[in-house]
Image 1 (cartoon, one colour):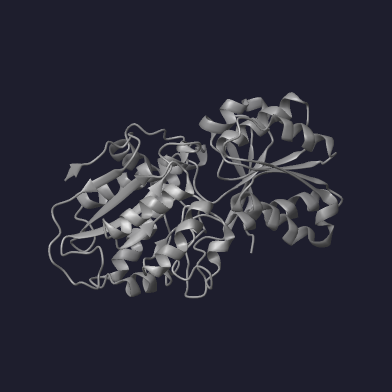
Image 2 (cartoon, rainbow, N blue to C red):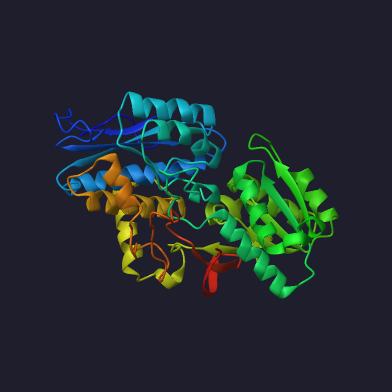
Length: 401
């Protein structure tokens, strides 16, 4: 095996194996010794922090290959940088399909990005598995028949839980929302509307931002002026930290909910100020390695051993690496279930037939399930609250569907 690019480098990450041997033509990207899969990741650009997902997945398949691969074949994950720009995602995905001839696209990051490549992949009959987005639209089988959502709870489900929780505390609550101006942000608004119904327009004030914006301070000031007593931060890490910090600086203390893609202590809560984030609510579906409750947990110990050996430069406080571990393990289960039939048809059949798959870094009780009519692998979450140092989970598992 030779390394095409170092894990920390910008650009393509690819573990290249020996030349492919002749194999069944209908099994694209598969030889007697290799399964070739691809993805795009934002290793550079405005949300490069999410590139940790790809780095973790590359590390996972390196580990798997050292143990013999899957049914005697090594998994060659070709991970390309798209700069978090949908046109670049399309360009790189075409390269993966037409030049690298991958068997499937796995865990590519971004709602707009996966939307941009979906029709192309459908036209080429290429599966789009464990999408790196919680956008609920990817569960629409009519629109995305060859896709599965990622191993994460959908954004829309998450927002429904926030609305229900807030209304249980105050039936007359008014909501303020800062959201990214794309499908990611709009999913949170849709989830609120699902619960609030006809009251939505009269009790919700929304402000948006673009991913290229330098700051969202003015939007936070505007939202405070709305008089809302509930604040929903539907933002990626950089803007989530800004929202937490600015609301603290202007002495605005509503009940605050934070998107669970932005709950990292090292890259969000600490930059925002630990005091500023104290009391914020969010949801969890994975084990937080920093939670003392998992100190002796075998799953967390196994994850730490993996990280130390296969992602030694990584921040073990970054839960992106937990998500990458879960996603790669889920794909491994699908590919193993395929046996020697790695045709597109059988890959999709197995991806849509996962039954009670338990992953060591999912919260106890959460299992991965799919079916031909259900492409949402995970739909349960548990509430958690930031205590000024770490997140503390509370209550029972809940579903937002």
